[in-house]
Amino acid sequence: MSQKTKGMTPCEYREHALAV
Image 1 (cartoon, helix red, strand yellow):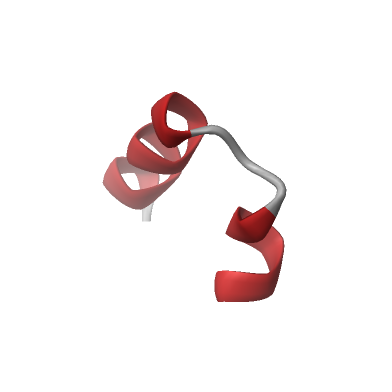
Image 2 (cartoon, one colour):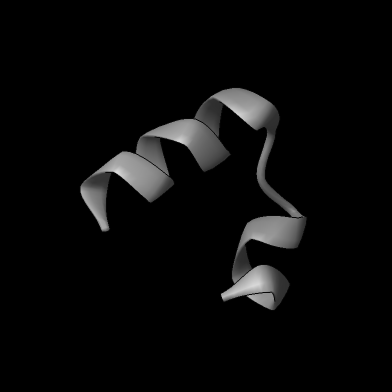
């Protein structure tokens, strides 16, 4: 998961974490 979120911005990472 870290590899996929590595290219994400803090905002996107937060939304992704909430979605998962």
